[in-house]
Length: 150
Image (cartoon, rainbow, N blue to C red; front, side, top):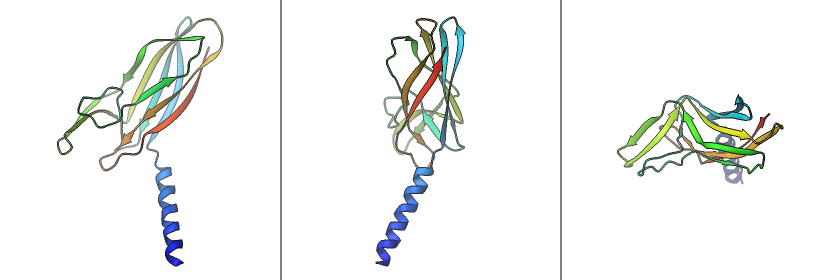
């Protein structure tokens, strides 16, 4: 009976500590840059020692790229693709024979959005990312967002 209780406590503590590991925080903002045109900023800030992967990866990458899914909204059109602003690091692990395009500290993903009329609306969606440090990678995580426009 003691072994079962000890195992249950150990699993519970492990699950809690793993669930509390969240080395990336996200901030979502919109900036009006012209009439009916906004720059939407999806900004990731990583704790020291952690990194986040770029949307584009080399052919030999095993890292999961950051992706964005925008919910269809008849009042909005996307102007181009999501751009990345930050200091990209090109990483190569000779032992694994794999490369990765990654960011440390911070990266700003920017999407230009046009509103079809002078109304208030929101850009809704979900991003998926993976983060790693020098010893481990956390499972991919999905983050929903709702960014007011207008």
